[in-house]
Length: 168
Length: 367
Image (tube, each protein chain N blue to C red):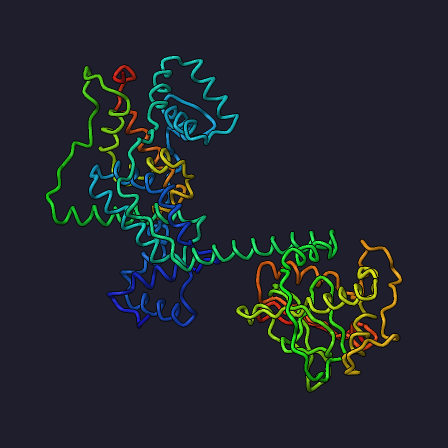
């Protein structure tokens, strides 16, 4: 990575913590549903940025943080899969009809059933409002792939909800 | 490619039909086929080894793939694209028309409108642990910048004040610091005093603390006064030279900057003359002559002449350095390491000056 002309200063780093720590934390937390792991990943991401501050400008810091956190999360998931028995979640099916719940909870359940990559692109799109290109930069995909994954994720979520009547 | 044999003749035939063989290889292939007549039909019918597409085979739902047409099969894709903001105005209209003509797909529209995730209100709990204290260096730099800016502002404001008010303010300030202690200065041999004339302008003057005056001339010594601008004699060059000013000798600031003024006052009192009407340069020249003569009395010729400018409130400006005067005076309010040194010739003309502010020194010769 080419060195930036304007590396992050200490005060800018602290500003990044104030502005982006919550966003990165939510992104990771809603991906893996483990608050402790999310805390570790966020802390690790900021530590990496601190140690490579000479290569990161303040303007690029948010993208750097999300990219680093995403990669750390993928590594974390892989390590966990190798060390822990995989819980085969039922990724198919719809919400039980007649079991009325809030939209947020329903979407959270539907999100948990999505493949990791679809979950990531949807969260980055909806939580942070990133463009297809920016999401591609974070996840290592091209814009077309991001678009396809977002479409598949939305279709899956729509299928999961089933009917608007299932939502309170 | 090696020589042709029974194991590779098919590859040779394929290359032959695709035109990849050289003339020698073609001749070798023909010789091989003549020696193996059972393979000759294969070489004469190349169509048999080529596949041809059946033009009758076509995708039946090609129309459904067209993006310019909204159908029941792709309405969800259009609705998601609309949710993402990817549709053109024309496509938006097509979707709206389709939904108007197919009301049962309104449910799809409502469902897809729901599948946008809303960020929660979770807060990262260890935010304070992530922040790094601002280093002393960075904080110090910022503080230093602030101090420099503040000092520069003060200097500029003081300088502007001085410029607009003239040296009256300085004189008033000096007058307010005078104490009435009077004591006779020891009378001694007159040293070879510098011929240059001390500046009594805004920067004031300072002369050596051991400066002596002719016997009989009563001298009042004053309490030390901070003086920003100094000038003294250089014994070797004969010109005025720099001496430590108030900043370099903070414990013993020399007071004789007031002496000439006091002498002037005393002389004026003695001769019943208004000191404000005296021309300073003439007075200094007179004083030099008195000192040089070594006499106790003041010759008549040495008496000061009334100044041309007899307006008491108007101070004649003799040095063409008003900006430097103002700068030195105002900077001396901030730092004692500031001095403006001036050298005058016997005619009272400014011949050289030097402005010093700590390590910064610059100056020029007027002539």
